[in-house]
Image (tube, rainbow, N blue to C red; front, side):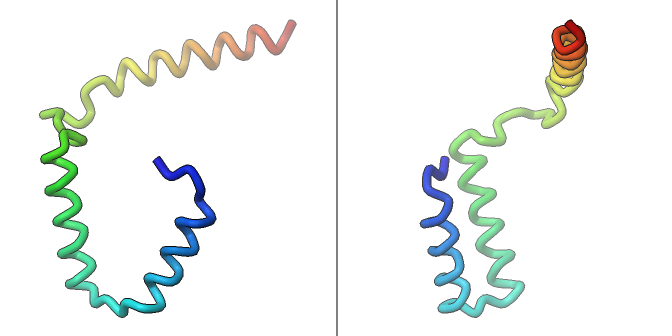
Length: 72
């Protein structure tokens, strides 16, 4: 998690100025990051949409509760 977004944004700006990456190189970096994220367990679900319906249902319930509470 990035705690200081200003420092991160400054780093990115400086990096972009220094590095003139081609599309192919950017794609290579992205693919390596994807491989590492899978290795670290970020994408460990077989079905990436698993649990989505449950989350949508919970969001709907919370929205209804908010409307009820705000109308009082």
